[in-house]
Amino acid sequence: MSSPIAPARLAAFTASLAVASGRLDLSNAVARARASLVDDRDRALAQDIAVGVQRWRGALDYVIGRFARRPIAKLDPEVLEILRLGTYELLHHSRVPAPAIVDDAVGLAARVRKASARGLVNAVLRAIAGSRRETEQLLPQRPADPADRPAALAYLSITLSHPQWLAERWLDRYGFESAEAWLQFNLSPAPLTLRANPFRTTTRALVARLEGEHVAVHRGRYAAEAIIVDRGTPLRGRGIDEGWFVVQDEGSQLLAMLAGVELPARVLDACASPGGKATALAARLPPGGLLVACDVRDRRIELLRRTVAATGAPNIRLVQADLLRPLPFAPVFGCVFVDAPCSGLGTLRRDPDIKWRRCPEDLALFAARQQTMLRRAAAVVRPGGRLVYATCSSEPEENESVAEAFLAASPEFAAVGATEGTGLPPAVVDAAGHLRTAPHLHGLEAFFGAVFRRMGRGTD
Image (cartoon, rainbow, N blue to C red; front, side, top):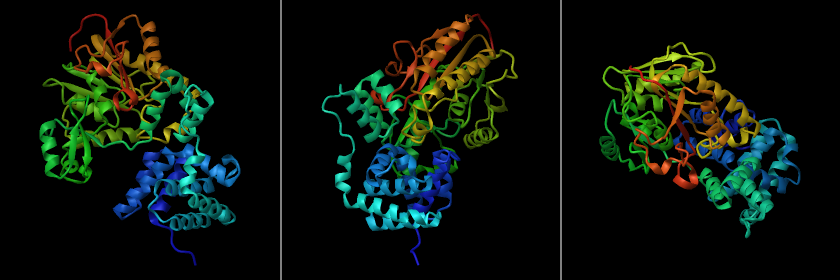
């Protein structure tokens, strides 16, 4: 009788298979996997394995292919996921006994009724385990001459585990060293970043409270309200229960600043879920001000509703609306914020599965939808009002190309520099006046933001 499979490995396999099949994205798959586990150590291990497989998938597949002596595409999907999990642990969890990893992988093959593959799984993983140190040398090495394009692309796409089409784009756009730094950034764990909830506390008071809860933090480099956790578990203390803070990336906090230091009385956040920017904006409204927060899907509205409730924001109203269609509002908003759905290619450090789900053709599809959304949002901006367009994409098709197309088709709007009336540090604003963060320049995920003003004068 075979020994039981470690719960963390079984949960990680379930999550990885859900991602590989397209049933769930990584964050939801991991959340479900963690919910099935009782022990905190198992939760942490399952998350590490599931995320690590997506982060290092390019290198893992290359190693598996070498040891299996067959193309990855010819492996059964479930067997491939088992091999990915085992290979990841063997290469990245050097303190874990290799026999335990291999035995659980063989047990997983039997559990999913792939008994005929048990020999393959056993042979491949035992071979990898027996040559852990040599395996790294199998991967394409950093080229001595970065101008050697085939060698550079092999290293960037395989060893640094990114799709070749994306590595090639960044290599051509930024050069070898910057592209390498970007990919290495995406392979590193993302820190937990918080923003004080102004409806409950202040940034300074939150830092003091977290220290009282034995949570070590430091302040963000660019966003004044960003608090980055170095050590401790703030998501389990009083802070999360009492709504002291919102979990929000530093780059996302910078986007919210594009609305301006002084907000008008009526603001629309047209793609508001999960609610980080909406609650940040609501806290800066003048007395009697109102923020209307919209999203289209039921699940997104429910997530937004929970965020608003947790912060206690009294000046937010939720409206379910589709930004691909005309909005049910007159042009009465002094600021309209469009944080548009995008490829997400700027957030691969936090969401590594995205890089394997995207292809070059997706960019034009996203851009077409984004242009429609921007036009719909522009229709409800009052004269003199501000329109903000933002993405978490790194790609120009979704960023400046959309902004340029909007201006060309909208003579009633003019571009506004991202530093104008916002308090944004100039270091995160590019030569065109757009907010733009990048891993190799700022140590932040890639965010983009453009600001426009509607001609004429108006009042709230």
